[in-house]
Image (cartoon, rainbow, N blue to C red; front, side):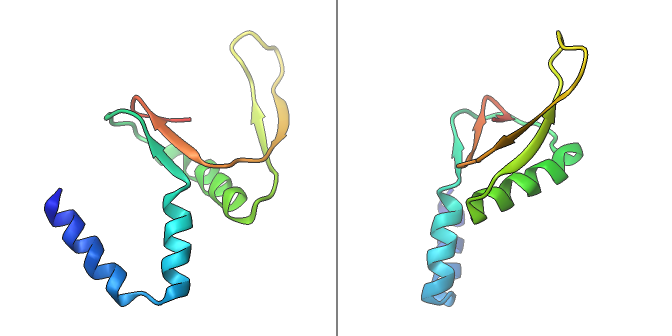
Length: 90
């Protein structure tokens, strides 16, 4: 943990004010509530789209089908951030 903090301190000293401001905003988009491991490689396009929506403050269209539904439904959502809760992205 201490080594990671030193590495981040070195990175911050090389960035300009604009990049530092962006990195701070970017860091505020993620919240972790518990330790866990999940594989999101199959969801990379969805996560990328959500991240663009968060950064640009715009709607993202998500198609979802619950276990009880017979047809998928498309929603337009305005994502504010991503949370990792018990090893899953929510």
